[in-house]
Length: 443
Image (cartoon, rainbow, N blue to C red; front, side):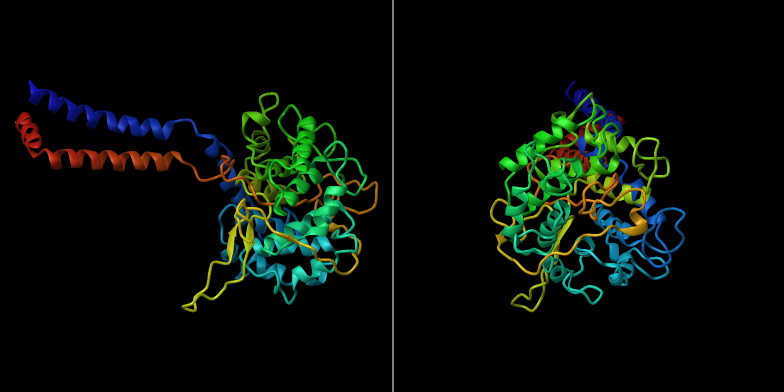
């Protein structure tokens, strides 16, 4: 009787194990996988729009890369875990293209955006294309502490310092807190009406500067975002219709504040910022600006990929290699949520750093035509930026489940198979007589 039971146990195990593995493989994706879905397709779409000069451009724009589009695509690819230095066409990478664009950098936001891209790719922004990008950013800091005159230029400036692991100027942080609106948000310029874009950028900037997730300025900003979230889960720069760009940045800001943009806390009408972003992905892998309305799809896709990957800006922090005692170096790049040049809480240090007066931030030109520029918001009132660029900070709480990451189901399935096999092997290894009994049962 005992032999029969043992034989039944082995046969049942052999029968049930494949079923268990199949169920794991077919199980509904977890929250991490749900957010991760769409990243690979988005990356493929970006890569398909690389020009002959190594840069990226919008469809129908020929083979000439576009400066701002390329910078944001570099950040998206880095956020997705791709070594941008190896992404080449005709032997030229996006970094090769950006290194030739210094003649087109005319505003502080041009330098800030490029610095963030270069750092994300693992190159030194202090020496890129013959330009010290950090020094250029520093030169725009005025006597009041602010980097540039606009909210976005100051936020991007803070992020730029974080991206190279430099102490953030205390004056820039103080100025940013001072221009926060009573409703908790920030507008394009001091005193301007709050909008989700600049509010999200500001949350990221303050986190990059060392503010804790529970900082009053950040909690007030998150409360503002809750009041303007739409029923479809998204956010809109223009009142009414959610857009992928604003929603992506808000999702990243929520992450940086230690919360989950794909969780129930940010669900409205049964939808979350993450589910809205995914709903705007087209069959070709690109993301539309609004549902049914495609505008600058490559640029928009770069935002969506970063959000789905759970990577607020800066997506990586560059640190120059430091020789060790044996003469070796240390890794120069770390994730944007890391604690490089940070205290025990993972917050960046700050210091006062005031330099030359700031000059006006300009528009991006053709690349921003008809859509505005989040990193190049006009510093004058009344601009019509509806697809502006903006940048977010790092520093998300590592205890929070991220919206992005690698799919877990295949990993779990493989682990189950390996553990099951090892268990069966050990069982019969430790009980050889049972193996003999099973052999007798098969006769």
